[in-house]
Image (cartoon, rainbow, N blue to C red; front, side, top):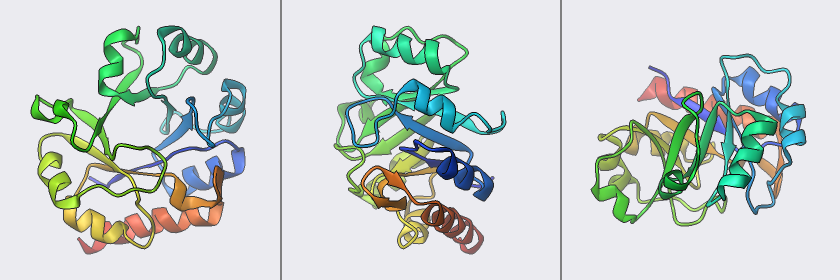
Length: 199
């Protein structure tokens, strides 16, 4: 199975098109405090042309149930991605897939892991890599989407070290904070595909 690629922090149709045309299987829209934050209207406009084979991910962190319900009602994402402990307080219908975020060093890692989960460092969107050997051991326990500090320059090493089910990139495909570069998106996805071929 090929590695699932998620491009996160999108806000315009050109970047979404570059991601989808290059082979991304998930696109993330940030609905929490961040330079990448979008409104539900922006997310809808940016993702209007994508097909059902690409998952639209609502990326949140510690939302209230009202904040989540607003995103659900106005954007209707395929997936909700937020910290694992957040789900206890949220009303998430069965129609929405859950991608809990497990952070490096979290006590939750000692428990049984969800079937699919995002693994990253303490701070999202800052380009901080996790300890890859430690991540490799965790990746054997479920379908890990590896995030944090990934780029076209290091993705081959990350895939070789961790062999995750999926990878998630944001800041490394930007021309400036919060603004995605279609060419950098294409280069990253091509690098993932090349890493798979050689691994």
